Image (cartoon, rainbow, N blue to C red; front, side, top):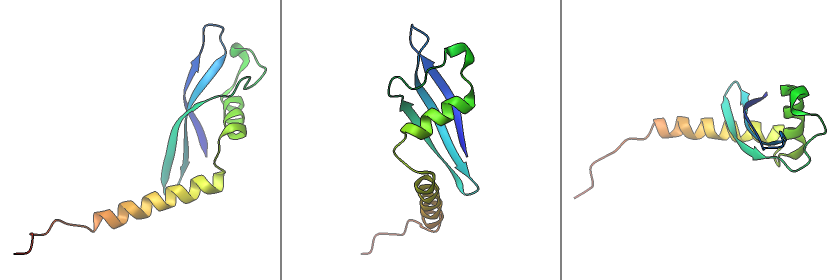
Length: 91
């Protein structure tokens, strides 16, 4: 599920950047996306979070399936890393 975590507007009240996360049971990924202009045709005062998510989904390079796979891979790597330990250097 997508969520918008931050919104940046310029002096003309045009939304130019959004912070976002994509979350599933195994974890989340996120970042900041600079919107290609014009991202939408609504004035700032009438833009909803749903509008921002739609704009993001239209512009982001990854599909939801790719994001889900990335989250699962990240969770697997974290699990594998938790089994690692430091050992003495052999003589």
